[in-house]
Length: 421
Ligand code: SF4
Image 1 (cartoon, protein in one colour):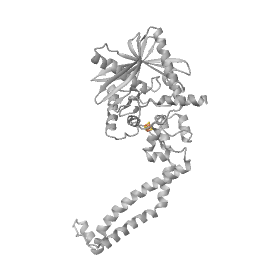
Image 2: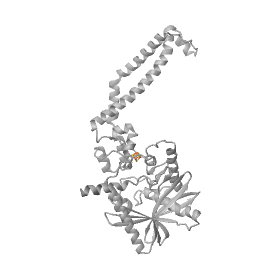
Image 3: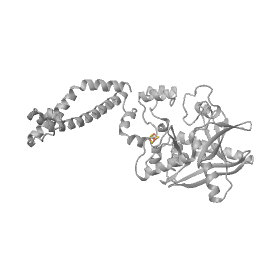
Image 4: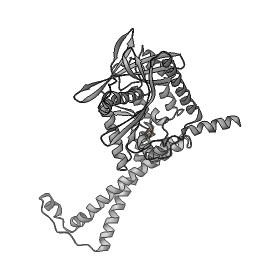
């Protein structure tokens, strides 16, 4: 009983979803970046569902409890900074306008460090990839490709934390001086704590203004020295323009394309493993259907159910928890068959029309073909309604029959296609 009540109570923690969920107001935690080369961060479609108040799936209580632990750790770190007289302020709300949208967020803290007045963003995590990516970097091939990094071996913050912190810094560096005649804050720190190993790591983030664009620059601090963490070109303006793009979809009621793949077939799995978008472990688990075959953003997405419903074909393919592999393949095969049949029917109709107008000419005037070759236009041959109908229907059936006779060949082609997936 007690445990049930605790779980129910924890599940109520997520009833904050609608807070400030205005269509044109975006949070820095919802940032994403789309370049010609890569897409990283929140999914555009996720944002659409969120802003349109679609019903989200619920987090389980253990995830919610992890969020709570993270928040409490944040508070402990802030208290530690207060004791060291580095603390200036915490939980500072920000709000600013960009084109037709607004950005609203809350900065963890402002501190006074040896690098001056800074924004502080605190993050916690654990697990092998967290420790390697954030704390140590990789000595050998990382096994996972990080699009936004120039050096794949380097330790670096997660992309979503970089984007979020860059927006905070943009506010304090570029917006507040204009709005409040304030002294700009020119750098931010992202402080990580690795729960499993009890290790801290900090990164420094700055913005470099070039041609009216604010480029994100990253550094680590070692022995009082700042070392560059090379990342690809990402500007604050491109993050903000991404929000504008999503807002325009919301205004026009157009569901954006999925930013991530919600179903991986066998070909995708092989490709993504080769491109290091999947680890060997993930690849093996997905290949054997022991893990949902999807991008990790989708696996943890609270709008997954809605998104699958909006992709009906995908729905049949991903619902392998309800339908076993055999039936999943059968349905897939059947749908492919129907798709091909619809295509063939359309082609048959077109060919039948063509036949309807030209066959009688061939039949009635043996010279038709000779004239046709010389581009001489033949008069239409008047046909009775019944004859027209018969010619059209007869031809349609003939074309269809031809295809049905090819069914065994089609099935072989389809089977080969499916088994390659
Ligand atoms: S399930 Fe994936 S594609 Fe769909 S909204 Fe969520 S993250 Fe985007």
